[in-house]
Image (cartoon, rainbow, N blue to C red; front, side, top):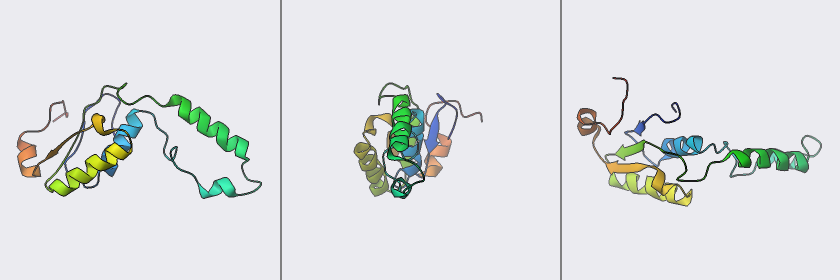
Length: 119
């Protein structure tokens, strides 16, 4: 998604999946940390204690929301998509981590969000 501290912009945010992944990556939230896996029920492969230890190790690395300085932006031409993105960020506890706007890519290309994009 990008190097830590660098601005990130999704001009077609849709439901917000990529933006949420960027926020989670910035906060060092391991993929799948907030959900279970079918493999956890496979007897004899990995013990419940090993799963628990792996989750505890991953959880110990997580940074609290707001503790990371972020420049993450998202927009979409459809206001319903922007609202959906916002609701998904709220559900994840990360609503304050992303700046959202309703925008047409044709307008954004002329006036991108603040930041150095190497252009």
